[in-house]
Image 1 (cartoon, rainbow, N blue to C red):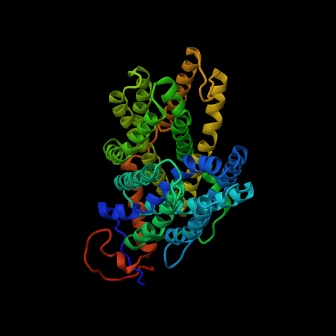
Image 2: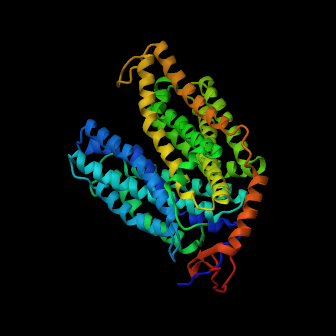
Image 3: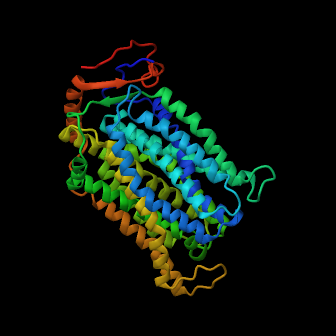
Length: 478
C-alpha cells in the first residue's frame, strides 16, 4: 500500500475513469428503484403481509431514516484515515447493505412488522452510507466547475442502467413465480452480486484526496450556521422541490396514462421505461449544456422546458405511441438532468463553504440534500392522493369516473409538478456562483491545499485517471 500525491489539480477525469468511479451507482440505483416500486407489492401480494403492515413499516422507517443522513454526513466530514475519508465509509456500508438486501428479498411469508422495520432500516442505513460517501467523493474528485457537471452526468447515466436492470429482470423472467427463483428475489440477488463487484472497480480505479481542515475541532454550531447561508438555503429548497415535482407525477402516473390518456397498464409501463431510458442520454447532455450556459441557468431552462412538455401531453392524441414515445423521452431526459445539476451545484457550494470556513462540510451538505429528497419522497404520495380525494377521483379498479373527475385528475397530474419544478428553478434567480466565481474559489483552495493536502491513494490507480503508465510514489504531508 502506497500513499501518493496523484489527484489531478484541475480535476480532469477521463471518461473511462469517470465510468469506473460511477460503477457502484449501478447496484445502488437498481436497489433504490426496486425498493420503491417492486418490494412493497411483493411483500403484500406474494408474502401475504397486510397492506397496513407494509405501509406502516415503510412510513416508520422513512421518518427515522431522514434523521440518519445528517449524522452520517457529520461522521464523514470528521473522518481521517490512511485509506481516505469516503472510501472507508463505502467499504463499511457495503456489508450492511448486502445483509439487509438478503434479509428483505428472502423475507419469510407473513413477515411481522418488526422484521420489516429492522431490515428496512438497516437497508436504508447502508444505502445512505454508500450513496452519500459516493456523492461527496465525487465532489472532491472532480474539482473544476465543468468536471463537476460531467462526473455527475456519468453517475446519473450509469444509475439509469441500474434502474433499467431492476425493471428488466422480472420482465425477462416472466411476471409469475419461477419454479427456482421468484423474479423479485432475482433482483435482490442481482444487487447482492453487483455491490462487491462494482465497489471493487470503484475503489481500485479511483484515488482520494483528503484536505486538512484549518483547526482541529468540529462544533455542531458550525454546522448549524449552514442554514444561515443563502446558497445553502437555495440548494436545499431547490432539491426538495425538484424531487417533489417528478415524485408527484410518479404517484399519479398510472392513473393519468390509463384513465386520461387511454393506454393499457402494459402500454403505460412501456412509456415509463422510455422515460427512464431517456435519462441515459439526458444526463450527459444536460451536463454539457450546463458547461455552456452555467449550471443554475441549465436548471432554470430544463425545469421550464419540462413544464411545457407536461402541458403538451394533454394535447397529444390519446393512446397514440407515435406521439407519446418522443414526448416521454424528452421529459425523461429533462428529469434526469435535474439531479445532475443539483448534485453538481451542491459540490460547488461545498467549495465555497470550505474556503470561507476552513473545514470540509461536503458530507453534511450532501446529507442535507439527501434528507430533503427523502422528505419529498415521503410526502409525494400523501399529497397527491389527498388531492385526488379532493377532486373526487375514484381510484378503485373498474370505477367509472365522470369527465369532471378525469379533468381533476389531469389538472392534478399537470399542475402539481409544474408548480414545484418551476419554483425549483426560481430558487436560482440571482445566483452568483457561476463558472468564473467558482474558478476563483478553486484557485484559492488549490493554493492553500498545496501546502496542507494529505493525499491517500492505492498504488494500483496510477493509470486510472490519466492513463499515465507507472508513476512515482510520493507523500505530501507538509
